[in-house]
Image (cartoon, rainbow, N blue to C red; front, side):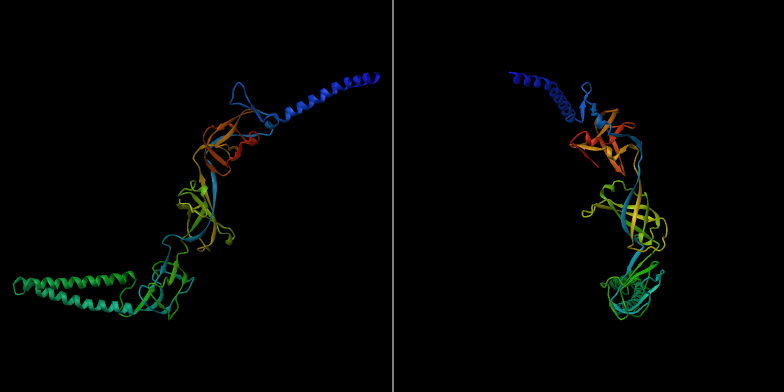
Length: 378
C-alpha cells in the first residue's frame, strides 16, 4: 500500500510538466503550419502576410515613363545596295590581257581586261552590211516615190522597198542595243574592252590571259565601293517589334580594336528565320568609314524608346496559373494580388497596360514565397 501511494504521488507531481510540454509542442506546430497569408475577413481582396514573410518582401513604386534601352545584335559588313557589282563577259571570247588585280581601285571607265571575240566581230560585220543595205534601200525609196506619183511605177514596189528599209533599220537597232547593253561602243574588229561602270575596289578577279570566257562563265571581276558599307545584323525574335526604321544605331568591329561607328537603321526584315529565331536589320553608316571591309564581323547596338506607359521592374511580374499577376502593397504586411496585362519588355523593366497605375507599390522581391502556384513570368 505504501508503494502504490508513492507512485500515485509521483504521477501527480509530473502531470503539470507534461501539460506544459504539450502546450509548447502545440504552439510550435501551430507556428510551423501557419499559411503564408490569410484573407482579411472584412475585405477578401486584402491578404495579410505572415509576419516573418512580410519582413522579407521588397517593394518599389510603379512609374510612368517611356523606357529607353539598347538592343544588341551581331552581323557582318556588306556593300550597300548598288555599291557592288559583277563584271561578266557579254560575248564568247578569249582573254588577251588583264589590266587590274585584286584591291586595285577602279574609276568609271577604267580598263579591266581586253578580250578577242569572234562573236563580236560577226556582230560588227553584220552592222556594216546593214549600214550599206539601209543606204541602198533609202536611195531606192527616194527613186520610187516620184515614179509612183506620175504612174510610171506601181505603188506595190514602193511599199515593198519601204518594208525592206524598215526591216533593215530594226535589225540594226537591235544589234546596236545589244552592243550598248554589253558596254561596247564603236569599233570594227574582234577586240572587246571590259571597263568598270562605277568607282570601287576590285574585290575579286577570276580570269587570266589565254582563258576562254563566255556569258555563262560567271563573274570575271567583282567591284565594290569601300565607302558604301552597311551592317546586316540579326536580333532575337523578342526584339523584332521594338526595332524601328530611323532609330540610331552604332557598331564596333572587334578585329579593329572595337572602334564605334555611328549610323541609322534604314531597313528591317520582319520575317523571322525559322532556324535561328532571329530577325534582321540594316544599320547604314553616317558617312565613309576607314579600314573596314565587307564580311567583317560587327556588334550592333540599337537605341529604342517605348511609348510612355506604366512600368515596373521585371521581377515584379509573376505567373499564377495562366494569369500574369503582381502583388500590390496596401500597407505594411498587407498585399493585394492583382491580375495585369503586360506590354513590351525593355531591358530590366516591363510595361503594364492594364491593372495598376503610377505610384502603386509593387512587390519586386519575395512574392514567390506567398503562393506555391506562382512562377517567374519573364
